[in-house]
Amino acid sequence: MKKSILTICLVLTVFLTTSCSYEDRSKTGLQPDDPIGTTKFLIAPNTEFRFTTSPVKKVRNVPLEIRDVDMHHEDIGTPGPIEKDDARAPWLSELVFLKTGLETRLTKDLIWKNYVDYSLNWGYWAAFGGQARERNYRNSVGTDNRGYGAALTYWEPNYDVFIPGLRTEFQFSDISNSEFANCLIGAGFRKYNFKIVTGRDRYGSFKPKKEYNIGDIYETIIFVGYNNDDLGGDTFADIRFGVNFNHFDQRSKYKSMDVEMNPISFVFSAGIGGRF
Image (cartoon, rainbow, N blue to C red):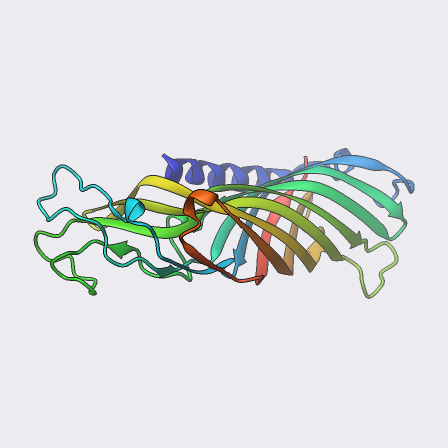
């Protein structure tokens, strides 16, 4: 179901983004001849890929109640808890599909944007940068062999699927053709869950079954970037580089777990978008 939602969002954002290139630019977005102080709504579907180095470095002492994943009724392996109780956490790999907010012309050369961006963590299904899912191959412990009679279950560290965030940024427009034209600088904040996902290995395909919310990650970002809005119509492309400062609030229920945080993580994003 979640994979279907991701596919639908990707198709829609690509369609809406390319559609914006055929819009009359005078209809949407701030224009070079807009007077200082003009504020307009920002509604921008995106196809932007964002990669963040692991906010969580490693998790240890995962309790038995999480590791004791029940088998599928068609499996014939030996039931029992997954033995390994630690793993590295993955990068956060996202598709940013929408930005909504306001943009204001502060001066002839400076635009201020305040918006919410909405992203899907596609790394939920492809844990890039982390450790292979810890499977319960009880007849082949410590290997990646499925073998015969294995209880095909797994657990893995991961993050929320849907992650909104607040951002504010200043962009230098290209009216005066300065060396800073189209450069931007900004900051942002968001909160999302760090979780343990458990499930089953069905014919080599991992099927999530249950999630355990271990705690909340509070993320503050400072970033710089470049925005090119000369692609025609209301289409733009941008890239951003940033540094995240992470804080973790662990739930009391899972205090026995050792969640090793990376206090700083690094972010890169690139994509195209459009304005309505």
